[in-house]
Image (cartoon, rainbow, N blue to C red; front, top):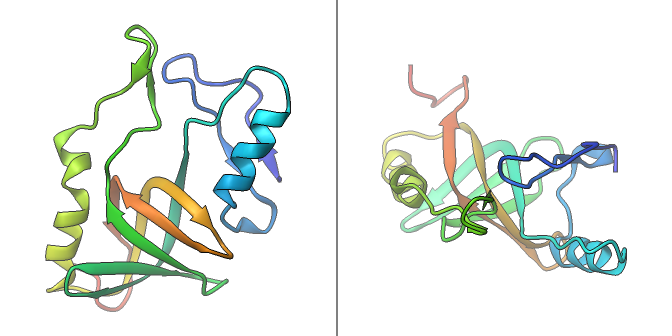
Length: 146
């Protein structure tokens, strides 16, 4: 790992981790590692922030990451990794977060190009990665909206 935040956010009990080389983590392996550290911590989830070329067809979409060429399957957002400390449960998804994948598919019928996608990540590079679209934005370049 290249960087780990020193403390968790008091607001939503999350921390930031950046991997050396900029790759995406093997989520099951990371969950096992956190569990075996023996400090009482658990991994509620991993949220990834990726940039790459959108590849969409019909009701499926994926992002081919710049640099590595790694492909990440995109899916509807079904869960939040953010914690609501006062209610002692995960924060509820906002309507905009639940509908982000549907909006992305609709937009991809008219546009293509580079995109930035943010959301919960599951899977591993070896088995295939899946990113639930919580938010997205088009990046400058050919095919991007003006």
